[in-house]
Length: 620
Image 1 (cartoon, rainbow, N blue to C red):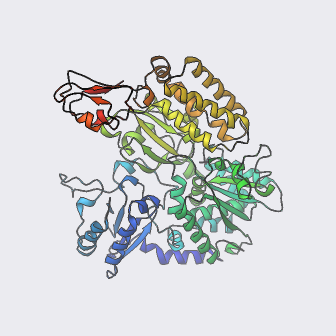
Image 2: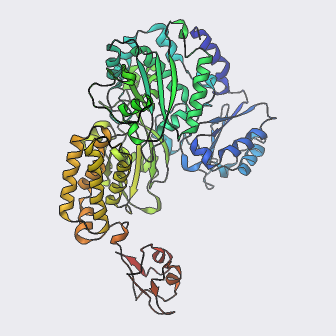
């Protein structure tokens, strides 16, 4: 690619196929083909639509990335020139065939397959995602192309202003100009630490070396997190473009994308994107005739959570076991292959091109005073609407839970939300009006993290949740430093005692003491943050710990060792269903007489309580 004019020519050629001109009669059908969609059966749906539309000259069928509303996969969206898009959900090949016949050929929307369909409505009876509460509170910046373009087409990316920011940078901005723009935008690292991105770039730029590197952290190891994966699967070119811009700004000529091997679709689409960019001259030598050279490589990780830490990640890229290195020296001085290196995560890079094109003031106009822009979250757990969401910084947790998330299922009460995964803390129901940004979360003992947001209801045991996340970090510790290797194991042993009914108040005190030592003395972020879920639950749910060690009860009824099942003789009708359902024959009694449970035999599976039609069985 030698000029912006060449880029503009591609954009002009392709843009009308995505942003359909009114009156053209064109129809564009997109099928969500990210991991979530494919796992739910999107491929046969896509094949059915493609085959059905092959003779329709005005209809194109394209794959796209994650559309966002993941529990309704497979999702198909139909764009018609001059009309509101139609979002079909929970599609099957049979439903897709009907859409072909009635909608694509007949022009009539198949209303009962549409998202938010309500038969009693008088305004057409259906709605779109864009009009739904799920999207009303969202603002898509990092996810702007996900669910819109074909991620395997560089032409479609260019049609949506792709590589225009790179052209602007290489033909009209100095490296200092670029860094100042990113710095003025207020963009902070979206990987969890929240360090100002422009400052990080400036540190690398200030160091002189014969070789510098740019690294994209796409390891994403938090349980329940899939933000970075979705960006790579839905808009891989935005990462290629941003890393090239970063290379120009910092003086680097080579970059590495470190992505876990469990993301095969993301890896394949990255490979396609890099090959396409090289073919058009947007990677490689003399990009846009500027004299600037930049190349990209992909490195696959084996799924070690510790490799999300930047120095461990770089050690892994170098071909060594992924273990963190002491800092200083920091990567900006001595990073990958002992050369100055800039490392950012996927979501951070996904904002760069838009900041360059629309300006620092535009980005800084969103969010809060110290946390600018938007944040992507993988919303999951006990919530009606699970999926991928992007909200302006400062949005309250209540709005995320009640509006975007659609509230808690089955009439249950919201109890807490876990942010930051194994490194984070929990926000209790009492703080549901907390505005989500870096400083607010830190002030209540939580952290932003990379963007996992797990919602919990009244049936969640917070001691068990703390044990779950600590067990994860114990398994994922690289073992290099003793505080993390040994200390987290000791903490887990104490939690095992508490949830098994043998814990004491002294154990809780020891738990807090250990947590403090581990935070202060661990080598890297994994160990330094591993105690956070325990400390957060102790802070906000101390009464549950006390119930476990004093009353020997689990208030949520989760910890089996602390449960006992009993039958209310006044309510029991002697139907024998509980005895028939019991897998270990722990229930006895005659027909039409009250039954009893042998607590020595009972394995506390809950089958009896779940099957009782008279509410005669309770647990305590």
